[in-house]
Structure formats: C-alpha cells, structure tokens
Amino acid sequence: MTVTEAKLWGGRFQGALHPIFEELNRSLPFDRRFVFDDLAGSVAWARGLAGAGVLTGAERDELVATLEAIAAELAEDDSPLDVSRAEDVHSFVEDELVRRVGDLGKKLHTGRSRNDQVATDLKLHLRAAIEKIRVGIRGAQAALVELAGDFHDAPLPGYTHLQRAQPVTFGHQCLAYVEMLARDADRLADASARMDTCPLGSAALAGTAYPVDREALASELGFGAGATRNSLDAVSDRDHVLEVIFACTTTMLHLSRMAEDWIFLASQEAAVLTFGDTVSTGSSLMPQKRNPDALELLRGKVGRVHGALTTLITTTKGLPLAYDKDLQEDKEALFEALDTTGTCLEVAALVAQDVVFDREQARAACGVGHLDATDLADLLVKRGVPFREAHDRVGAAVNAAIEEGVPLERLSAAAREATMPELAGVALAEELGTDALLARRDVIGGTAAARVAAEVERWKGLLGGDEA
Ligand code: ARG
Image: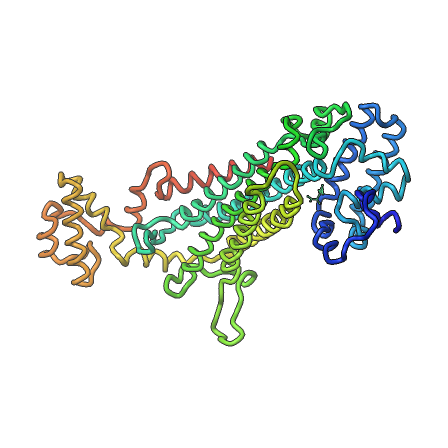
C-alpha cells in the first residue's frame, strides 16, 4: 500500500476492506466540501499542540505553512480531491501533509479524533453556508420589494379559501413573502448564534488528553461563545444541522406558497401575471403553451429539503452517545438542503425581476364577486346597525345582487330599500369603489396604498442596511 491509500486506523487490520463496503464507508466524495474547514481546523490544532508542548515551535511553523500551502493550491485546483482514494476529507488532508513533510505530518493527529474534527468542520462550514443562504434570501426579498414598490397601489383580489374575499394591493401580497423570508433569515441567524461553540479538543469522546488551550482554539477559529462544555455532547451534537435544514425547509415552504399563488395568478382563469421568457417554458406538443415551470420547480423542490430534514431526524433519533458512524449521513442531507434552497432563492429572485403584472385585469377582477360586501356592512354599522345584523342584511343584499346580476352598488331600488333603508341617498359607487376599500385598510400591516408604500421604504432601508 502506498501512503496515500493507507487507512488512518490500519494498525489492527491485516485484510483490506471489501470494495463494496469501502464505497459505502467512504465520505470523501461529499465531505470534500469541508476541505478548507478541515485545513483551518488543522492549523489551529497544530498551534494548540505547540501550546501544549507536544510540538516544537519549528514543527508547528512547518505544519502551519504546509497546511496553508495545501489550501492555497487546492483553491487554485482541487483535482487532487478527484483522484484521491482517501476514506474521507480528514484522511485526505493527513495524506497530503505526510506526502509533503513525512513523519512530522503524522504528529498532527496527536490528541484529536476525526470525531471532534468533523464536528468542528461542520460548524465552520455551516457558518459560511448560512451566510450564503441569507444573502440568497436578501436577493429574493430585494426583488420582491422592488415589485411591491411598483405595485404598491395596484388592486388585486385577495382570497381566503381560494374564494375572492377583499381587494389587496399586489405590492401588499409581494411583501407578505418578504415577511416570511425575513423570519427564515432570522431562524438561520439564531441557529448560527446557537452553534457558536468549538468542539475541537473533545477528541473521540472524552476530551483530549493533552493540555491544549481550548478557549484559544475556539477564538482562533472564530467561535464567539468559546469551547463546547461537554465532550460527549460536542462530538455527537447535530442540532445545528437539524436547525439549518429546518430553516431551509421553511424557506422552501414559503417559496412554494408564493409559487402556488403566482402559478394561479398566471393561469388563464386569473390572467394577472405573465412570467418572463428567461423562466418560462413551452410545450413540445401544444404550440400555444407558456408554462410556469420555474415556479412549479420551486413548489416541487420542497420535497427534497423536507426529505433531508426527515433523513436527519430519523438518523439522530435514538442514537447512543457519543459518535456513531450513522452521523456521516448528516452531510449529504445538509448539502441537498443548502444547495436546493440556495438555487431556488436565486430562481425566485429571477422570476420576480421579470414578471409582468396586468393592472387593468386585476382591477377589473376586484369588481366581480362582491369583494365590497364587508364595507357595505360597515356603512350600515356607521349608521347604527349592529354588525351582526348588518352582516345578515348584506348577505341578503348579495343574494339579490347575484339574482339581478349586478354589483352591490347597482342593486335595484327595491332590493336596496328592503335590505338597507339606512343607506338611502348614499352614493354607494363612491363608498364601495376598490380604491376606497383599499384606502380604508389604513392600519399598521394593512393594505392601504400609503401603508404599502411605507412598508416598501422600510424594507428598502432594512435590506440596504444589512448589506452595508
Ligand atoms: N467521515 C466521518 C463522518 O463524516 C468522519 C468521522 C469518522 N470517525 C470515526 N470514528 N469513524 O462522520
């Protein structure tokens, strides 16, 4: 066996792994993503070992310089990872080190284990990955806020039970998704803060036997909350991975809800939205088709991310302390969640940047379906009719309007007199116009155009401020 094929744990073993098990066991094909995290952790560990008197200053310096050289070379060309037969990323790094500095490289693993290494790599990797997803969320939010600004005053039927309910503005609807995504970004930030402790120095399960300054290690690796406080927990804790996948799942759920709303709004039944050519597809058979595939994929991809969450919950349930190889399964689930969510956020932004909203069609739709019934009841309330009675009477008025085939404001004099004599002489067309309906919702969180415009400004400030 050449040194690059040797196992880190080979001492007790004479026979080689069965090739089928070897493949099942190998994680390099996916944990190679940790290579820079693993190198950074190794640099910190070399310093820690020197501090503990295990390595001389000269040995430490040579190891650090070599690890840094490996990192610089891999940043240029990571093809060594393609050809390596190493079991995992930790073995790969050690192989590289030993190839370059011989026996000195074999000293680095003193007092550490792949168990605390992988736990540390995961957290380092997640820290950066969370930032990337948060940037993606901000991108999608920024596109939606732009759109909300353009259409802060553009009426659109709002639905409950997918039945026309009351008018809202399209801008208001866009900002609903912005709010959802803001909670997702917060969830990720919370997770990031909670995982801010360094497992390195926990070794295999019981803590390293060398007097390494773990707080110094933690601060060198940028962990603001110091060293983990229990080695058994530190090497087997995957809560942070679960939390991040959960945050990705809610992000995807939110994108899927937007997708569903917009797919409907682009249907010929609603005909309010048209998506850009960059994110639409046609049919191989039906020449007239223009399909919202981008949004259908946003909706459809939730399954993968939710699946990743289920994978890791199932994997960690009932797992005995401390490290078990089951935990190797965390990575592919995590990467699936991060990659899918990242791409979908970008696509959501592209869709929002390129969508066309038909103001006239949407405004006309607000005039069909008696979306003004609540406001009519409110007019009665203003004239002293108790709301419950007003509700009943407007219900009867709606039935009459359906029978007559007219909007409430054009109800026949007889039906109007029968259901709402208190409103004799009131110009209903004015009181019940879509713009009047919108303007009345002038509360914090309401859909009045001025409120939506103010929210757009608030969001622009928040998103701009975040970038600065
Ligand atoms: N590849 C392993 C993982 O991803 C690294 C830790 C292996 N530790 C061990 N004792 N086998 O979890």
